[in-house]
Image 1 (cartoon, rainbow, N blue to C red):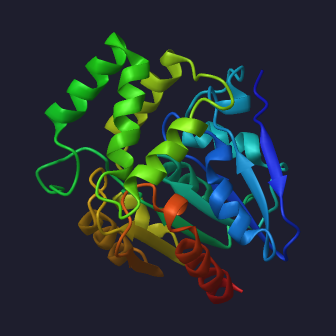
Image 2 (image 1 turned 90 degrees about the horizontal axis):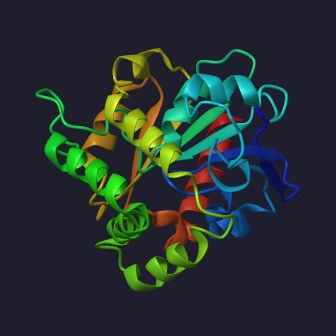
Image 3 (image 1 turned 45 degrees about the vertical axis):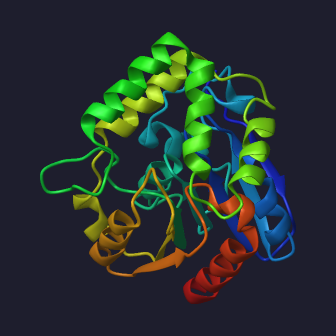
Length: 259
């Protein structure tokens, strides 16, 4: 089964496709969707093996997902990718059928693991230890990851309660799919591709993000012809939860810039 679950919310004039991060699902965007429903029509996608797409046999691969979404989300929409979801939004930007009008990349980096010329990322040893912990106890590892996502945020405890409440609200993801996601994060490197993406692109960073350094997002924005970098002063990695109003305002500005 290759079908992906897509939930539609709102009736606004602008179309916005939302792609969630590792181990999550489209419902995690609820605080942001509540802010945007008047101005946007929202298409919240559950990636393969996650949420209501748990039974999908589609590979957790950006090219496979963009092909599966052709004809199911509007051409010319804005796309928002959060964390791992940003890799899927960047893949869609190169698809002439989907033809995104603009990209919003929230806590995203084109390379998640350090390299000699890319120090603003997770050390390779730390990433490997995380993958080993996932194999030993995936629920405990997911819970630790949730804590890292809000670490440093001004509303960390409130945001963590929301994440823990919602992460398994659509069922538990297949641990094999979680490992597939880690493989994607470990090996993806889209730095060279950024120069060829012509659409307006908003790189929205949490200044307190402990998973994706803001410096990496700033560098990525500078590499794009129409890249813009915006920093949320009090936000961490999951800034769309406790700072949904600020994120929504930035998205409206992006939509106006891309009109």
